[in-house]
Image 1: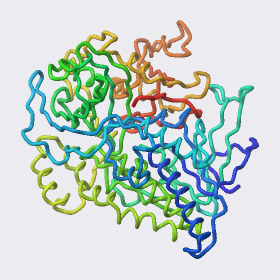
Image 2: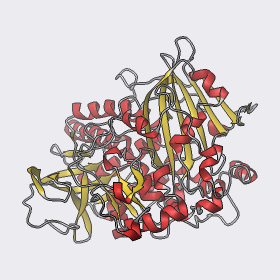
Image 3: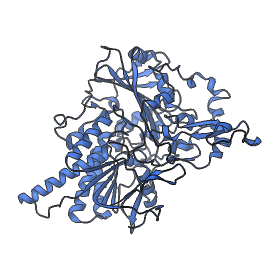
Image 4: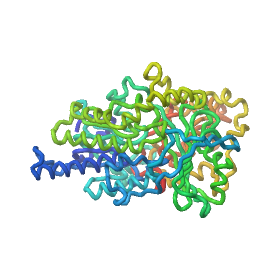
Length: 589
């Protein structure tokens, strides 16, 4: 079976052998699966027709593992899609029923004051989206999943990959998580052991901060010599506006209000049927210990420019996710013996344009082409799989990421003070003196003490006030989480591991006001009095703890954004994969 990590040897596990295993059923993973199956079909047809020499591939098995209950349920994005990769993957995507909300007809960028607005007279190239498509990525991924299944590709929803399998140093597959464990890890009557899936090639396409790939990269040194991973956090709502008030196909980006500290902005996309997508994005290297994207999104809706569009409407859905922001210099080595990595897991996002879906698809396709080479040659070593990195370097992925290679490093120092340097990068194709700018910190290291950031009365500051919820247009965080449909078995082990809760009580709350209570877009973390903490014995709080607060983790609220794993100022929280099928149930996002 080979070596695994933390394998429970007393559990008898079934083993399945596949040819190519894809971990993650998002845009990158599904594009890889579909393209590979198409390539295999063409290869075999060419062999049969005598137009190509070699040996036909005898129905190699392609398997896709998806931790969500169904394909698309964990997919969240803006999303304005550059269709370049989609057109390569499915040339007749419109005829095949790809769910497209609207083409982009009009762009605009605004600077928002507290109540004022200023429209830039010219839309910068970064924000020009003519020719792009407004889509729901959860719908698009469901559609891609259907195309894959129609081709005979095996998709296994509800199966979370939790460990990599290694054989003589090569990645040889994964183990899926056990199901039917109680909170303390004991086996319930419905216990089902995870599977061992052995693969000739494993493609990691888990999305942002892939939890399994993080461990693989650390073990294999795939981030050696790279800039550290850094991230942004985005939240969004879809709002049903009053009839006859919204013209579809408009894309608006804003800067300024309500994000007065840190770097970020908002986006607004108009859809058919008088709907809009409204979202906020902020850099996670913010110094603000009270950074709360959900609160910022609610505040954004109070601005006259936005409110006049949405008044008389109602919020339909909500969601949140982190996205990689480091770009080219934070991209890991993309291959090793037996494995490749694609999409957001490989930091393939143009953070300047907030575009990554087309790169995820393209990287999945290039991984598929490399996997085909390996299947034909029978060589699954790094020597063959290195062709994947060569293909990426020769594609538009490299071109786009290279032009923004120093963008995050520059703008994270302040959106407005660095505008001249950003303009220089725009003129020079990303060049900066020194060539490669380092990222001197990870996101969790930048948080300031609350007293330094906000003074002695932080919650009296207007920037930290949540607009009064009305359950129609304005919501508290817990009510917003309800709209994600997120579900986890409350009797299963928590997948959110806090290394030392005493740090949360004795240091973090006093110094930082518990940032996880704020940056988490799903109300997972809250500080409660020791006497009210889960499992507390009434009257059993020692005198030394009287008046203290303890961290309570409401893990069933989690929507899998992974921000807690990124931004806890003590690097004290680890996001791990929950029991397969748990998490948000996105349908319209």
